[in-house]
Length: 252
Ligand SMILES: NC(=O)c1ccc[n+]([C@@H]2O[C@H](COP(=O)([O-])OP(=O)(O)OC[C@H]3O[C@@H](n4cnc5c(N)ncnc54)[C@H](O)[C@@H]3O)[C@@H](O)[C@H]2O)c1
Image 1 (spheres, rainbow, N blue to C red):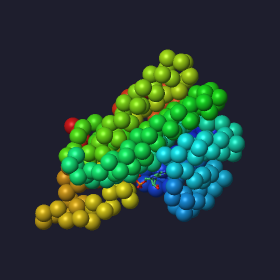
Image 2: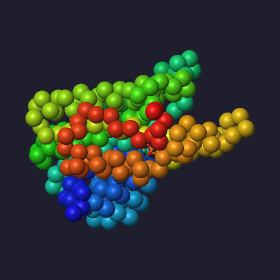
Image 3: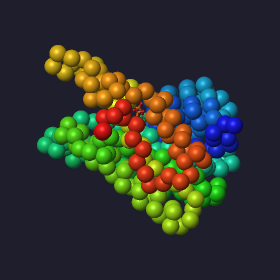
Image 4: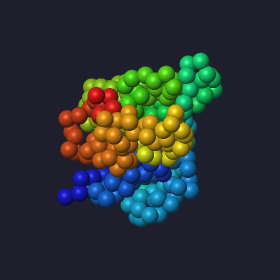
């Protein structure tokens, strides 16, 4: 039995990396995937590859009107909404001393405010469909600090606690909507490609990041997508407001 049969899932950041692998899994497990991303070329290519069970909608997650169109398009095309994955995000290196106000705002607008808008806009449609599951991608850097990633850590910490707030509100209101956060370690996607090609001392950037994980390697996007699939499915119906870590032992 497919694990997401007839469930409609809207995925921000669905054109690349973890979001794209999650979209592939949604379709493989019998669901419908609405890929919402600002990268139209990649998003349309993946939607075409996935066929009738997928739809691409252009979205800048910082724009409320764009979210409303994406949710409306999901319901119009597939008849409802049962899941939301907030995967759109940007990674930037900066410290408290060198991060500009503009850069802090940009990172937090995309990673944190984008997640807020996604949850807020999707909840009415999820309610109308009888409930559902929201999955917000935070990071191991939403669980602890890192001197080199100030704005990113702040944004991902906000995603972590926003998730708990959404979960508690929906539980209190008896909406049958769950909300959980996922905290990946370093995953081999286009986001970290620039870091992998840098040299750190006498090691490659890839070696440097691999050694952070007790399992001795980077994660693969499909490994995070498998955790997301579990959270979107009815296999996780007693989990809400929780943190799901997928980090090769990094935070252990
Ligand atoms: N790769 C990692 O090591 C890692 C680790 C922890 C958390 N994460 C998080 O996982 C999520 C997915 O990242 P990924 O590694 O797959 O990266 P990625 O760069 O492959 O994918 C991110 C996607 O988000 C989209 N996006 C960025 N800004 C957007 C905006 N304003 N509006 C709409 N779409 C936008 C991009 O176009 C891209 O398709 C992000 O939230 C990231 O912070 C990644």
